[in-house]
Length: 457
Image 1 (cartoon, rainbow, N blue to C red):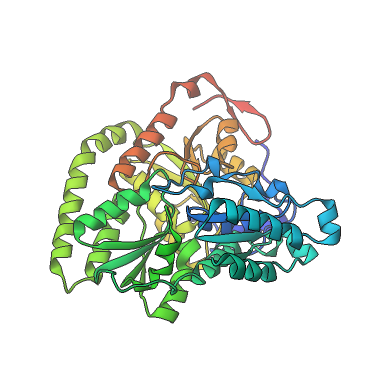
Image 2: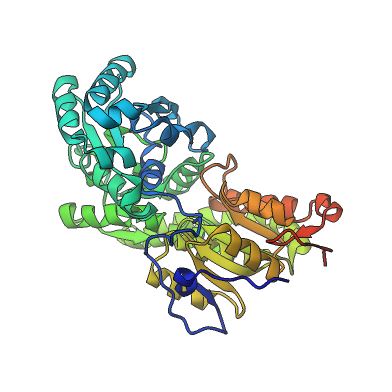
């Protein structure tokens, strides 16, 4: 088998536990020529803000930036669906030469008049960053004329990494927080940050908290409403589900409104249970919340364990590779896969920080590959070398798994099946089982990175 040659600029971003000294380099721009799996600044901002369903989302840039439409995303709405449109100013060469600010003003003005949104987000893309359109001035003018917040999301793709897009989105949300009436908010209220209601997951989680006696004031941004964002400063606690995307907003709200925050995960049994008990512990003055949390956990566990044990019997000893957006999700997935008796041989992320990777090193077994900002060649080779049976990732990772000839499980924003919560854990086990145990894999030869076929073990 041909030896993988890691690009010189990438050597600090790949680590094998038990073999290498741990000095993982992360939080840096992608290496030129590496064809990174990581998305750009604009994508990061769009992922966070687009689930706000009653807002207008207008991409100021060439039509290509809007091609990855929201229709393929799994974030659901219980009401308005303005967000599912993919609006763009469709900048052309003549706009690049003479400027696109006037075109932006006309497009946004017409769209606001037609759709009557509660707010509008204008996404500045790479081209706008280069030609220097004064988007802030256009937004200010539209806000005054239309009497709604019109916010510039400064997200030129070349300015940094996907993480910088998260930050731009948090700064945009922060402009809305603090502008609504909080007089009617209940005392035991929380905001859930970084939960995007994929396949209705936010509704599952809200049900758990409601049964505990805790009010969910706002989910930011799943099934989001502008009015909820304006009132978010009235909650007693911020519960951060996606640390990579929303910790920055939690820090802003802590500094400005003195709202504390905790980090949780809703994936897997252990972390889901901790998420409920951690919130109950915060409201320790009301011990009934903790008692009700225990009842929720017991009822949900009783409902799924028989099915989960059946999947575990079939999957024990199988190997999995993970490549996800944030490293915090990887921790939960490793624990969830261990519940199913599976070993994780590769764990990587697009946006992990040094602390995340230190924790990932502790939880991974010897021999596991930990990788930051991977490219297709690296993922293909390590998956092959480590003999993984399934790759868990997003839409960009799916072809890699199928070309190698192994199962794939979608754990990103495109999925239509809820994987969070207790019921989500059972769905996750079913997804992994269906993919790994599919008889189709007996009919194909595994394919390594360079097109060499070999028999399945």
